[in-house]
Structure formats: structure tokens, C-alpha cells
Length: 317
Image (cartoon, rainbow, N blue to C red; front, top):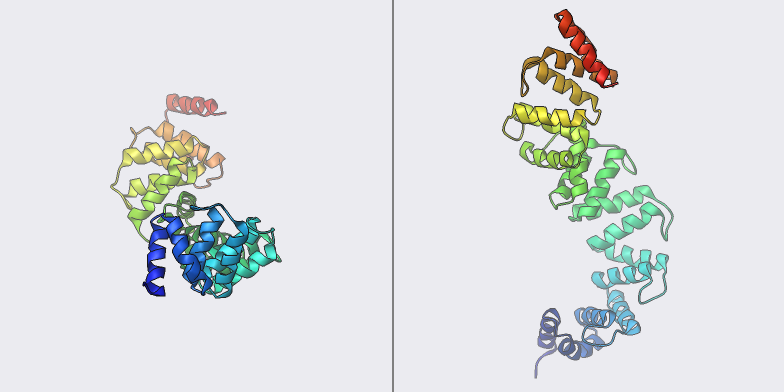
């Protein structure tokens, strides 16, 4: 005869292989004898009707026994059951209790769910600092949604002291796990000068994603990276194209950068009139330093160039 340990190993292998009828036959007697791993597997079989008819009461019973024995996955599952109202009546306070027990043991999904419930005051008093504490715990355990959430908290000073550098680090961590929203938020922090890139080449990837999504500050910053050869090969022509894209979205700083391209013949054919026009447009949108640059160009204009400049400005009104 096989030992209980051997039966447990074989039963769990059958469970993982999808042979749930065999797994149930082997594991349920062990679950009755207190084998926690068997209890969790049997609970899942009944909860999802794996190879047997779904049995909510049996699933809840086995999750409860495993959770009472201290199994963090069973505790997390109980939290989810009570939080969603599946298998048992909706009970957010009970959900909080089980999420908290699992979270205290380091269960990352429970840490994230606990933070979310504290943030929104669901089943518990609204408590943003406590939400931040649990988001941070989950983020440190590698949860990308928690990394995004705590990054946003640091960026906005919500529940924690505002810290753009910390926000950038957490956005970067989530972006490395293919979280597009985090990549965009990181790019915007970089573009707005609120954070410094840890790695220029990596930063270029995130900024390009945000630029492709149509964010004008990211389009402008990506153009600056191309212009300076920061994190990617220098390309004045491509830089000017990105400045133009952001300018079409009425982004003043990009207009000033595009004007400089025309003024100096970088990535565009040198054209003082176009430079003047874009400096004026930038100034009209609040870029103060663009005004004197426009006026300096105008002092060298011929009568014909001055007329062309005013005609071009009139086109944008």
C-alpha cells in the first residue's frame, strides 16, 4: 500500500494533470485526515465542478477547514468567496478578515485586494494610508497592479508623501511586467521632468509607447531624446517629426522645439519665417522664452518675409 505522503503526491499530480476524478478519489480521504494541500485541491474540484458536479457547500467546507488550519491560499479563496458572493452570501467584512489573515502571511493577491478594499472603503472604513501600506507590500512582492497603484499614490501624494522618484521606480517595475498604463504614466513623469530615467534606453521604450498613444508631452520628450541621442541614436529629422506631431496637438513646448529646428536647420530646411511663426504660437500658449526668440528673428526679416510670417500666423487663427 502507498503511504499517505505518497498518496498525497500522486493525488496532487493527478490534479495538476487534469485527472480530477482520480485526484478526488485519492485526496478526499487525506483531506478528511487533515492534509491541508488535499483540502485545498478538493475544495477547488468541488468549487469549479472539475470532473464532478459542482458542490458549493462542499467547496466552502473544504476551503474553511484549510483556512482554519492556516493555509494562506485557502484563506485568500475564502476572502474572494465572501467578497464576490460566490459559494456563500456576500459578506465584505468576512472577506476583509480572511484577506487580512492571508495578507499577513505574505499572500500577494490578498495584499492587493486588501489594499483595494481599504482604498474604496468596501467592507471597511475608508483608509487611504492603510491602502498604501498594503499596496506597497504587494508591490514589493511583485504584483504589477499594486506597483501601478502605489506609483500613482506617490505621484499624487495620496496616502503617502509625494515622491516622484518613487513613483517612477514603481511605474518602471510595473512597466517591465508589460503594464501599458504604467509605461504611459512613467513616460509622462519623464516627459514632464518630474523623474529621472534609471536607464536611458529603457526610458526611450516607455516614452515611445506613450508617444504612440498620442500624449503630446511624451511626443515632445521623445523628440528631445532623438535630438540629443539620449537612449537611442540621434536623429534630427525624426526629432523634428515628433515635435511637429506634438505641435499639432497645441503643445507649446513642442512648438518652441520645432521653431528651433527651423531656425537652425536641424531636421528641417532652415526657414526663419517658419521658426518665427512657431515661436509666436508657442509664446501664445504660455512658453515665455519663445517670445524674445521670435522678436529676434523678426528684426532680420525683409518686408516680404515679414508679410509671409503674418500671413502664416493668420492661417492658424
